[in-house]
Length: 253
Image 1 (cartoon, rainbow, N blue to C red):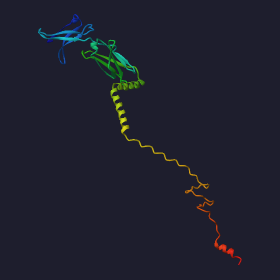
Image 2 (cartoon, one colour; image 1 turned 30 degrees about the vertical axis):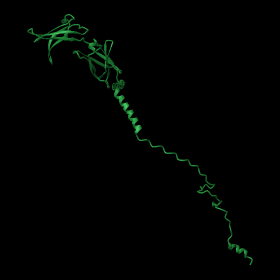
Image 3 (cartoon, rainbow, N blue to C red; image 1 turned 135 degrees about the vertical axis):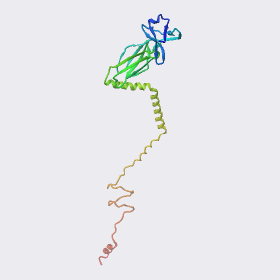
Image 4 (tube, helix red, strand yellow; image 1 turned 180 degrees about the horizontal axis):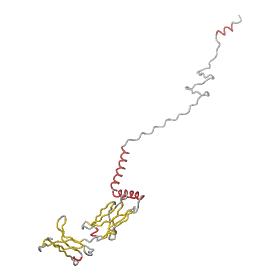
């Protein structure tokens, strides 16, 4: 090694807790801290000094110590309503926790009684393998939690409905905007669209026509005789022809 790492802190002999050794990383030389005993539960500062093998001082500085976190279980059972993963640790540690997974939906977590609660729900259809990887953005600590489904068959439809409701809750602003725009469009169309044609006026009712005794309808109001001939004035007189009268008059001669 071309250099060595020397670390100290206010909590006593740091060599009883960490083994500090030089290392080569993708970005260059570094000092690696490997736990060898129980670590403190509270954050602190570590004074780090780097010296060359020949004894010359290469550099010095301060490194923050972040306590590790722990998960409640390495295996979590998830039902139709999902499950939660509980992460324990110092608030400074929990505030820098990130998570990613496979086969599960990850929702925003919250702090509760000194724990970070991470709700999860399974994909539909139910995946063959599901897991969640919990990481600290300030350290290299990672913890994997396997997720085991506890339902099959009909539970898939419940999980599908649950995922739809979850998507609606997440995108409620977009859904609400679409509903408002649809309502305004319908109102504007009712106000400016084509008016419906008015209903036709009812035709006047016709009184039933009463006919004569023979059942025929009369186009003009006049009287009728027995043989259905009209009477316009005085009754017609049947007169005998003059020839017949003359014969009767002069028949004695």
